[in-house]
Image 1 (cartoon, rainbow, N blue to C red):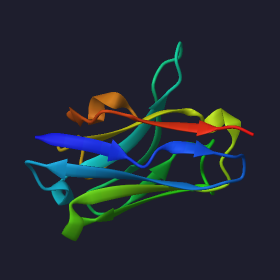
Image 2 (image 1 turned 180 degrees about the horizontal axis):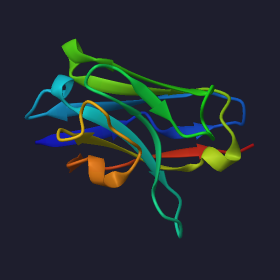
Image 3 (image 1 turned 90 degrees about the vertical axis):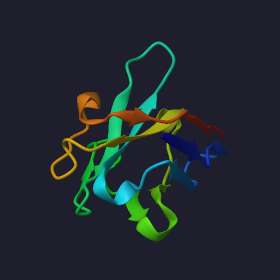
Image 4 (image 1 turned 135 degrees about the horizontal axis):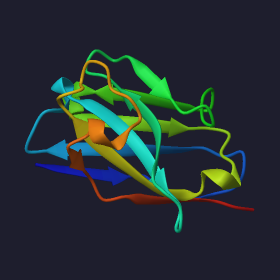
Amino acid sequence: VQLQASGGGFVQPGGSLRLSCAASGFTLDDYAIGWFRQVPGKEREGVSCISSSDVTTYHADVKGRFTISRDNAKNSVYLQMNSLKPEDTAVYYCAAGFLYSDYPTLEEYNYDYWGRGTLVTVSS
């Protein structure tokens, strides 16, 4: 069972990036998937999640700018990030959870499997 986040990079304020979360060893469509981010010295925070029935939730700081989606055929979940701000700079992680797959929240306890992060840097 493995999750791998990718797609991070360096972007100027106002720019866009799309993060991908690919799964191996299990199929994502029965799981809730969450995106989290962490800045050094701060606690990891939930950014967005999508339930097994594709209900989405967003942190207030990213609502209207980020979009989470899944492609079950590719066993992947995406986070489209638009209008990026310097404060979005962080390491982004994806996570999968089964027990709370129908009604996930942005709390870490909802998720069982975690991937390695991908760094997003927003700077001019």
